[in-house]
Amino acid sequence: MWLRSLVALCVLLSATADKKLSNHATILADSSTNLAFNLYHNMAKDKDTENILISPVVVASSLGLVALGGKSSTASQVTTVLSGNKVKAENLHAGLAELLTEVSNSTARNVTWKISNRLYGPSSVNFAEDFVKNSKKHYNYEHAKINFRDKRSAVSAINEWASKSTNGKLPEVTKDVEKTDGAMIINAMFYKPHWDEQFHHKMVDNRGFLVHRSNTISVPMMHRTGLYGFYEDTANKLFVLEMALAHKMSSVVLIMPYHVESLERLEKLLTRKQLDHWLAKVEQRAVAISLPKVSMEVSHDLQKHLGKLGMTEAVDKAKADLSSISGKKDLYLSNVFHASAMEWGTEGNPPDTSIFGTDKLKDPKLFYADHPFIFLVKDKKTGSILFIGRLVRPKGNIMRDEL
Ligand SMILES: *[C@@H]1O[C@H](CO)[C@@H](O)[C@H](O)[C@H]1NC(C)=O
Ligand SMILES: *[C@@H]1O[C@H](CO)[C@@H](O)[C@H](O)[C@H]1NC(C)=O
Image 1 (spheres, rainbow, N blue to C red):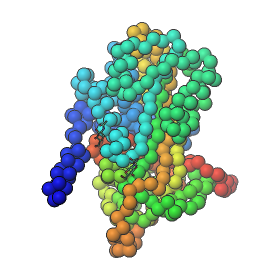
Image 2: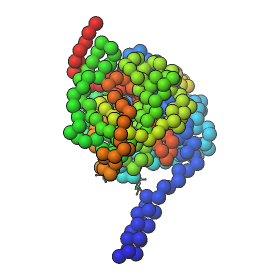
Image 3: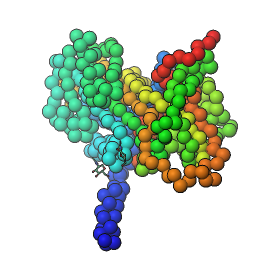
Image 4: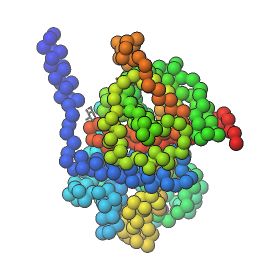
């Protein structure tokens, strides 16, 4: 009996033993982290943008797809944006594939993360066989043709596909397609953090979330006191909270100012170095957390932003050489839709009840997330950023709207 459990344990250990990430995947994980900050800052500048939700590792893999379809300077520009020249050309696609497969493995990581990708081309395009095969293999992309001339049915076809691929969690990617003469990338995702220690499903009530001083929205708020990573940056008047996700393989990091304010000030501070600095200061201690129990559905068109980061040719009709996609120089990237639904719920693994009522949970710090904050989902093993975003305006009814 004893021996049998030992054997079972060894089998279990070897099955879950960390397979080491290859060198090139490690380098690309690092590049995707730089991409995360560059892209976030570029998007945050947009005055019309409120909530932001992007997955840098998925954006990296879409860039990999563009590199796969591109030739000459169109391709090399994309590789530069990815800092992909740090790995050998023949390892780029395999490395990106390895990274995404690793971080999105639902079984190993006990999270829900469904990613669907599609490349749409105009009716006239003929996808090259090699390209279809390789983009499926490395990036899990499907291909479809669409008649963009019939805008209304094109838009509804896109939205229907996204909704279906996310089991209805993402009902709309776009209301309109402005440029109808190119190829279109769409990522449709559903992500649900599964906490290392669940919230009690009954510890939820309605509270006000202050979008700004004169605009309050009613949201369900979940509450829990437990041991969490916490750091108060008194110089910058902000809190950093790190909440482990299941199996502690990744965590959600929230960065929130003391009081309601525009996030501009925090965003100016937000660099990769600063984040590392904050996380190094985080200490495990008792924290009483209140967090909006909401779902965010956010869709961005990254075309313009990727252009600003240096991918200028692929998005330019006159200059793009995406001839590996179709064998002809007849395509450019007219839209890059990156859409995700993220559901902040109470679900997670059962908590360690042995610390309930002990000194460990005494005098908790308060983390009351009733005003805009920045958040990240950070992966431990690869160091990559699975999501980065900000919650500025949750869904809900307006409670007060004063002048
Ligand atoms: C996901 O993780 C499980 C458990 O660790 C492993 O058995 C499986 O091979 C992984 N899947 C992929 C696609 O890597
Ligand atoms: C996470 O693990 C728990 C317990 O093993 C299981 O009930 C749950 O379905 C898992 N969730 C996901 C998203 O894998």
